[in-house]
Image (cartoon, rainbow, N blue to C red; front, side):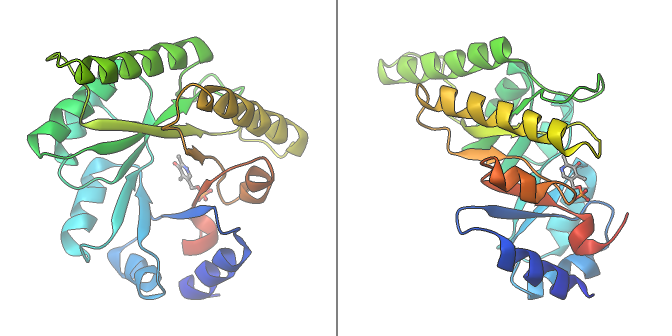
Length: 226
Ligand SMILES: *Cc1c(COP(=O)(O)O)cnc(C)c1O
């Protein structure tokens, strides 16, 4: 099937409240343009340099999502155009995003990446660290209202992102997705800005949606294997 057929087929299966991020990492601009011409406007990349090259070459109504691990010293290269950063896993990184966004008079939306998988190698925050960051962001918000100088007004934490363990064991994947969903619901009661739950990739997005995902990141099922 063509990229267009793949895309339209997946889109026809998604509930209305679920946003599709077309993960185009390693794929040439011509492939992305095929998806663009079929109506796709949100693309996900995991390397800042590659994303920037594609941003330069492609139509400007595209929303670019950074889905990979972000090094603090590279935030500056995407601050003027990136639309959502999925993998925020430290306060230090969030502060750098805030600083770089301010230089462009922007507010950059961010997701906090949560550690849900069994593998040691996956990046992410645990529940205590999440609490700490959200508390910090919220306190700064209050500081802003009271006129204090020290603010975080150029970032907005709009939700959480997680990656399940790389396994065929559906029971385990489901357990991890449900853990993330319940954490999301719990945090939402105190932090009303949390609206987005990014979970699910080509192999597990249907399960992720059953478990409450509102944003799926799909690459190989649209563009083919990498
Ligand atoms: C590559 C990647 C995806 C997409 O993976 P597919 O299996 O090709 O759908 C989703 N999320 C992240 C964080 C990725 O790095």
